[in-house]
Amino acid sequence: MGKKGGKKASTEDKSRKRGKKKKTTTSPIEDALACPPVAKFFHELVVGNGIGEHAVENAAEAYRKAWESRREKALAAAQQHPNDGGASEHLILGPFFGPQSWRIEGEDPQRATTWSWLGFQSVHFCRKN
Image 1 (cartoon, rainbow, N blue to C red):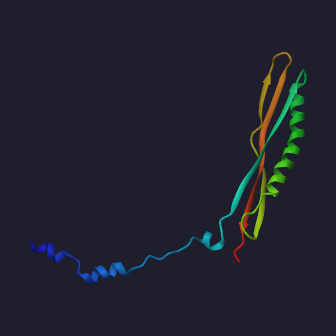
Image 2 (tube, one colour):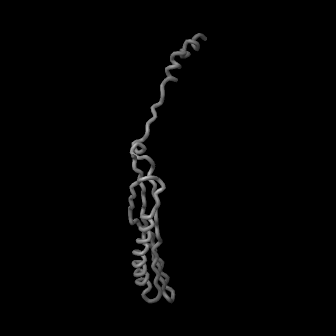
Image 3 (cartoon, rainbow, N blue to C red):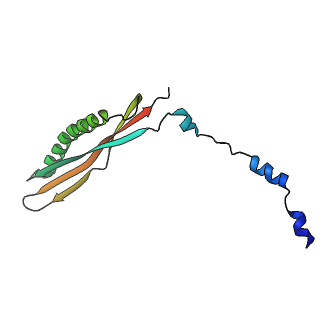
């Protein structure tokens, strides 16, 4: 019965525990940057179609021609990515692209389609002044 009263912490012990303040720290990334980076991925679908006796070759050639125009379009969009913040550094990564897929139909006339996507990553890094 008397043991419970003896184990209670004194008022001094409680005040010491309350007096400790937690140290607030920021991560190294937060220290290095004034604001988080802003990124956006700009992608385009590249498609090539062919029909007739040389459908596969025609689709492959159409795909090669479309590749360059779609690459330029995605790159231009990434370069024009607006910056909402103040002064920043702009980095463009890529091109990135997915696997090329095919669909070949052997009916008369033969048809072939090939496609994939490509794109560029646009990243704005804020400068800490």
